[in-house]
Length: 346
Image 1 (cartoon, one colour):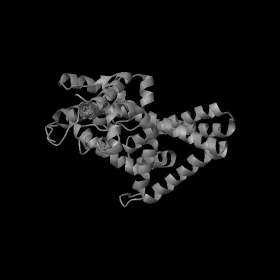
Image 2: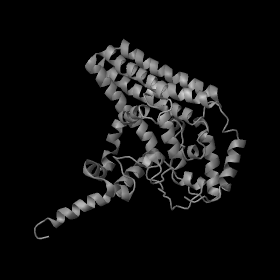
Image 3: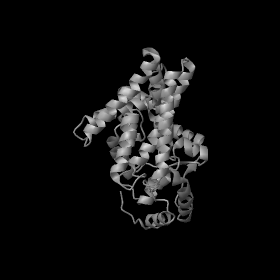
Image 4: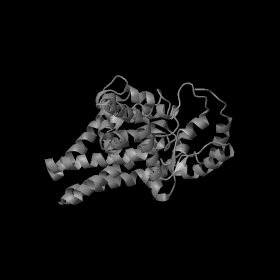
């Protein structure tokens, strides 16, 4: 990766800073956290007060939604968006991430920081290293066994597989906190153990074993799909770079990201992450100020001839699925050739 001059980025950051968009707003986040924790408590109360299967099924979806929303705020804490003191942000991240979500805040922060430093960089961005999805021709060719079949059909399997994302995040988190890499093993294990206590036992106590397990499965499935569909438009189907790519920081962050058009409802649903370009340019910028930043960045990119990709929610998913289908096409083509060559008289 070339270290081209970052003068343009410095000029853009100066504008953003002068507008006060990088200023911390802890009381806003405290209010958001209180609201989301309150909604989670409300979902738990419904568990014990309502004896109706369909209402509890909807409540399971509601809990999955609230947990994903809590994940967005935990993400803000991991980016040090809330407080000036790092320790306070870390404490919020552990409370929201480990205790409420059952995920390792330390693991998530490390992985996510690597992604921010090397977005869509083949071999360096951990978000490109996913066994069930291939993003480059080299990854497609390297797949073997069941992974090869899944890659061949990845555009069709993408959304169904998101139902398993919650479990995958938990599994990786458990392995991390039990490994020598973990620096906060004690507190993280305790908080994640407490998460298992409340998340697994309360539904079973309230609804009985089978209905309780069903509640957990529905909740986790919706959590995974919701979280996955929010994160998917961010980079999938956008420019992928490697060590030979000559690009500066500003263009790296802009050209590898996709924005989903802003609207108060869209902003709420995506937790502000629909402004992915601005988030990558300024990770510590509070999520609720990204809409303001987007107007500045959009004009700046237009002035400097930098492609700024923004599209609708539906179109973003079309682009993602189209890209996944296209990059995996050689596997389907090879099967078609094999079938035709084995046909008598061919």
